[in-house]
Length: 180
Image 1 (cartoon, rainbow, N blue to C red):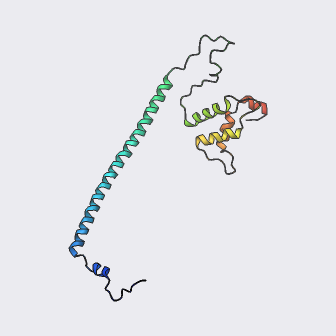
Image 2 (cartoon, rainbow, N blue to C red):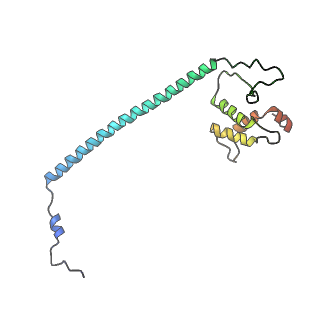
Image 3 (tube, rainbow, N blue to C red):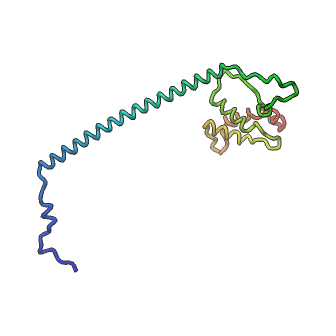
């Protein structure tokens, strides 16, 4: 099936026996060095472009914060909307059911206060006496929105529990006998 190749010289050895000259290897080294220089130059160019993009992004972030602060200060200086003069005592004005709540003027609004107001509106805007929001649910929502870490036993953080208790309406506290 197979022929013995022992009496014939191997042709692949004879073809590979031709050694490239020293000049060939010098040319290959020069080509490789040129490729290395070209790639190094391109890499430096990309690094410069990345640095410029990082600078542009950081400037954009700073400008965003400056404009946001400017707009917040501008909004704080605006007068509060006046109550509708058509509403008489004992009568409800149009849309008053949707606009129920309390208006509070604060010298500033922190991220924490903003989250607490959001959670309060989310959980306590439309509650029924038979189905009160659970304090643990409110506390976990506060943890989630503020990025606080819960306790090792699975409960919400103590800060969130305190905030949740502060958000609980006084009427509910008096009804179920909770003390401050």
